[in-house]
Amino acid sequence: MHYIWQHSDWPQFRYDQAKLVHLISAIRITQGRLVGHAAHLDQDVALVNQIDTLVQEAIETSAIEGELLNAASVRSSAARRLGLENAGVAPVTPETEQLVQMLVEAVSDVDMPLELDTLYRWQKSLFPERPLFMPDDAIIGGVRKDTPGHPMVVVSQKGQREVIHFEAPPSERLLDELEVFLTWFNQDSRSLDGLIRAGLAHLWLVTLHPFSDGNGRVTRAVSDRALAQDEGTSVRFYSMSAAIMRARNGYYDILEHTQKGSLDVTEWLVWFLETLLSAMERSLSRFLRMLDKARFWRIHQDTELNDRQRKVLNRLLDAEADEFTHGINASKYKSIAATSKATATRDLAALVELGCLVQLPGGGRSTRYRVMCE
Image 1: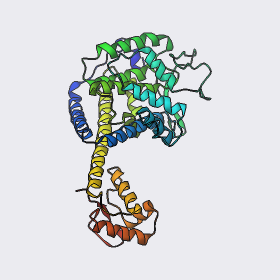
Image 2: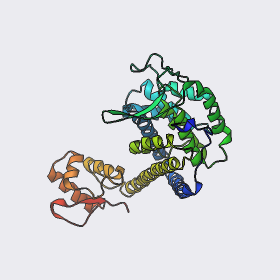
Image 3: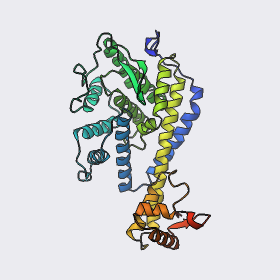
Image 4: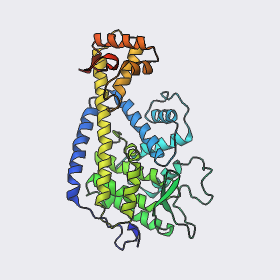
């Protein structure tokens, strides 16, 4: 016996609730803050945030599988899907259109049961054209059929080396296994805490690995649906795939450890909840930046600024929390604004005079500044 699906009591997962309580509490608090701050975003800013989150989810869920998407094409597809027909400046592709459609559908109509045909359709949508690398016997839009002597294995790349993390159940078991999973997802699991339910759904489906390809993306879509059902909203506030991508090595490590252990999946749930909390905290930080930016431009709506100054200020206001920890100096201003060092120095001095920037302690050639948001 090597894997959890080979245990006689599979899939009777167990976990220590006491080890999860503090994480669930922290997530609930962060969820509340996200919803509260989202309510203060004006309609246009809220829509931009939804598009940004959807674009991030599409790009990162593919990146986990080693596929790189054209960000401009994804943004065009996301904007169209959210009702801005002319918002995209780049041509869309069948790949981005169908991926975005799947991600939107995953968190829409969440009261509808999740059906086997839905999973088939989602997997099929990932492959509008059969990839050249896909084997001829690989199935699109249905469960996989294993070749004798070649079981489905879950692998990742570490440098030039391919690492096998676990082996999935044989294909002849899949229809029965999926029926049990879907009955649990649609009915039996509704009394569970919604966050734990999402973590268990993710682990269960990725263990089955029911398709020839696309299992990770479909699994994350199902996990997103469980989270949307828990939150009671189809609005995306955060990207779980982006958080998983940031911890990609840890993701495969915990999967392998869990697959080769017992049906006590407490460690997996701790990892899942910690990653979910990280995704929410990152989104909350972005919300706060958006509110700060809106407040800043209300204050400075009549301030006379040149194009260089506006460009740099917007860059500072849009930056991640840890990107300009020590502020901005003349050299960085020069780089962002594509101007000379002398012009950068003059622009910075003027921005201080106008109350847009404040000079940080220190001086000389390393003088730095930060945005004055209050």
